[in-house]
Length: 311
Image (cartoon, rainbow, N blue to C red):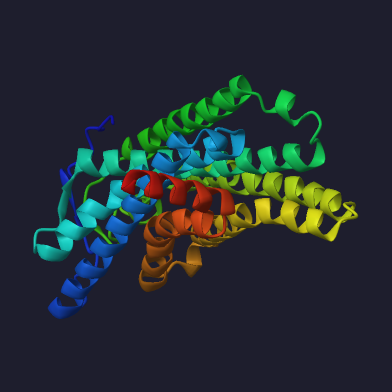
């Protein structure tokens, strides 16, 4: 990040959950630690299962494999710092550290927006064009789509974070949040931030609203194709392949839209913290549960791996 000469702040103080009593903070530490461990274990299980079972070497599970990696990175950007702050009275984070945390958070969140859109396109191709599916979603195309999602997200996040941290920060340096999120950090800039706010809004529309609209269009066509299937069993099977992804999309985009695309005047510390807990902690934990518990192929592959290890 580039510091302007006007910037005098060298570190920020994260309010986090310091307004809660000490017993509550310790309770939150235990809860968050359990959630973090479950998230890592759940996503590792999916990674191992998809890797070891050759029947899962398909585009849908290739994207799920990448989503699991993404979720582990995503939650690890914020959770270790949150856990440390809950046990310590020292809640500071350096200027560069704050910029780094914001950069990686934006990168992984943007990657997830793009990857969920790619997964929706995959389901659209599978159900609407089943005879041409293997040609449309060949291995080369899948790798290119995933690589494009990751690269575009990291490049876009670099521009967004660099623009935010190139502004002057003269004090105060207290961030009313448990991590360096965009709204509370930009509120500390000691100059007019109208240009930044416009740029942030345009970015949020580009990475949240547009992919979400593409997902809606894809699933509208998928629903139309499913309704044309004469067999009840065929319709059930087609819908079941989309249900997990729809749940994941609903959880991620609903909280993201409410947080970043609502009017600035409606911001509230308590509400923002609650929403942020959901999309930074709960969604990464729920995704592996959603995709494994609702997916017969994943459960079958997992049982096969476990039983073969016991044998």
